[in-house]
Each structure stands twice: as C-alpha cells, then as structure tokens.
Length: 141
Length: 257
Image (cartoon, rainbow over the protein chains, first blue to last red):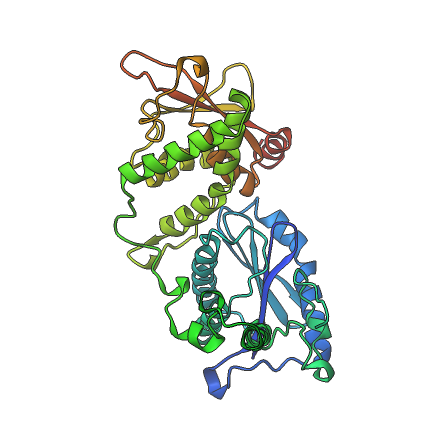
C-alpha cells in the first residue's frame, strides 16, 4: 500500500509533500506507485481542493474524513485552524488511524510555524520535519 | 551551479534520468537537497579562509541534535516572566515611537508587529484544546461561525495569552458586522506610561494586531482596532472593535441564515 501526502497552503500552494508506503504486512515503507500514478498524484490532490473548501464550512471539525476518490484511491482531508490543508491519498479506508496521523502532523506543523523565521505558506524543507513525518507514517499507516 | 526555483516543488520532474539533479523528489523528501547544499557549504568553506562562526553543521550532525520537533508543545504552565515581557514590549513601543511620525503610524506599526503572531497563537490554542492528557477528543473541533470564533478568542485565546478571560464580549447594536471584546485591565499596557501629548495612543494596538492576524488566517477577514474607554477603577480599560468584512457576514448568511 502506498500513500501520498501533501500540505497545501492558503494560496493553494504546495508547502510540503511526501510519498511513502506501509510497514504493515511486510511492507518496507517505500511507495509502490506506478510512474503514471506518481505523475497524477498532485493533480488528484489538487482537484479535491474545491470539495475541501466547501466542506470546511459545513462540518465544524478539522478532520473531514474521506472526501473524494479516484479509481480506487481515497483522499482524506484535514483543515488546520489557519486553513492549511492536509491531504492524503490512500488505498484503504481507516478513519481512526488517519485522524491520529493528521493530528500529530498538525502538531509538527505548529512546531514549524512557531519558528520565528518561518512564515505562513513557506515551503517546509527541514530534514527533521521530513524524518518525523515518515516516523508518524510508520506508526499509524 | 544552475539556479533553481526554491518556491516550486516539481515532483513530476524527478524521473530516474535526473536523479542527480537538484530537483525536489517526493520519495526522498528534502534530504537530498539539503545534503547537496550541506556538501556545497563544506566545500566552499574549505576553500575560503576558515571561519568557525560561519560554518553550518553538516546534515548528519544536525540530525543527532534535538530539534524543535522533539520538544513538547503541551507544557503544564506555558508562562513567561511578566517583568521581562513588559521590558521587551516597552522597548518595542519606544522603538516604534522613534520611527514614526504620529499616533496613527505608531499604532499601525504595533498592529503589524502583532499581526504575524496571530496565526501561531490560533494554531497552538486549537491544538491544545483538542486533546486532554495526550488523548485526542472525539471530534477535532474547529469554529466556523462568527460568534463561535469570537467566544474562542474571548475565553481560550485570552486565557493562554493573558492568564484570564476577557471581561466582556458584545455585539454592536447599530451595525451588523461589528463586535467588541472588552478588557478592563489589559496586561500589556500596564507598565506603559503614555505622555500627555500622545493621549489618544493605546498600545493595545499590538493585541488588536494579534486578533486581526488570527481572524484573517482563520478566513474571518476583519479589521481590529483598540480604543481607550476608561471606567471608574479601570483607567486602562480597552475596547477592541472587531469589524468583519462583508464577505464574512454574507457567508454566514448563506450557510446558517
């Protein structure tokens, strides 16, 4: 099973993205997307942004669950209080663990945001952040 | 070295052919780029005159050290010393005063300084609100109505910033999109003595900026100003006037009207 994660800023700009696979069922943590699919991932994620922008004013929850699907791939969304969108492309539904994953990711994002040298919508390039996200993915997905 | 655009992430460029180029690869994350820049830094510093103060730590050394991501955001008492805060704020005010031509400009400067703090406070408070003793709440709450977010500011945000809730939250009687948050004894201007010729000045413009930044980032676009309205026993009583954008009230009407 493979996952594609993207953090989208308030101007619909990509802030961070990552691709990883599951460690469960003997997986080695690397993604198994085909080349065509890998090219499509950012498009699929971006095309679901309209749905996010509609739903975020309907549900009073940060976690919007599965909002869209694309030929067997699901897209789960989470909107942080400052409207940074966390989007995850995945193959299997598991609401509770994705919720945990998103919340911990929000925790990491806040730590980045609290850095006085980081401004909203800046691209996150920190290796420690990347490492922590991969760690979370291993723990929950 | 070929110039590359740091603002763009272009995953579709990261095919096997250009694995060695300096393009962001989502399967590897930002490591590769950092390693390249780290190696660039070490090679350039080796050729130039050695300057220990300017050496960046290599990526391996950085990963061993504890980063900001290892720290816990839920410390028991997130407090800072009032004396040092007041001293810092007093310096900010006098510095802004020297660099501005009038009250309006000074208040504007303070407002702008507060503005960038808003989103950070908002994110942090929601994060803390949505968990109890390290466990997630069932629904991760987010406020989507005007009145809800104002109550959140009045209670939660005020408590985390100033250690108490704001004194009153009122809606303007005449205008639909105006609200007032009232603080009888604002913490931040407690130790600011305003000279007579600047009588109109209210240093809580800084706090108004925080609220404005916070509301803007939560998509409740608003204009926030601070006004002196002294009352018996409360000479520093401040009213924060929150004036929401037309689009916000319109959205409220469509969604909940």
